[in-house]
Length: 224
Image (cartoon, rainbow, N blue to C red; front, top):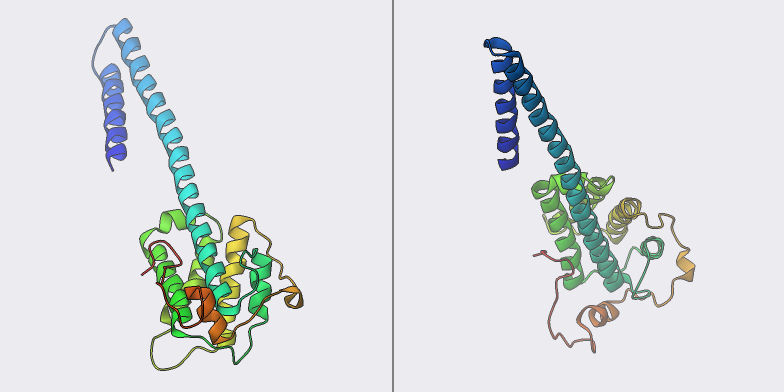
């Protein structure tokens, strides 16, 4: 707002100077001086406005990229807790793990909370930071997919594991496109250490032995 007011002020000043030079009777030398001064001010204002626009766009792109990386890391962590697999997975491996989800895979409350946090955070970003989101092509689509997770505990119906996997897969695919990561799906049969049992989820999430809960850490900065 302040930048807009300053820009408008200088443009108004330039127009007043030009108006004086053309409307009022002044000497040729004064008229030439006023015309040059007015056009110079307009040129400076336009140059500064264009440079400022590029800087603002770059700032929004950097913020949008960081938010997209945060979202992807949150999804990777939540999928790893839920299904297992290598601790560090690329997007094609995440999609492979999700393609192997079974109809009877358990979803404990702590794992469900991870997905719920991702959905809530995605919905808030779409509402509260739309400019940064729009600065990264494809990021809005990813958040719209992931925002569906915010309704995990709405009503009495439990979301089926296969539907949950589809939502996560769609979101991962769009995040991969946004960040230039692999969008193809790896072969699920090549994923090692996959174990969706409730005991293994507990161990991966809380650490240590099953049944030992030192503390729970949010998977996405700002998530509640």
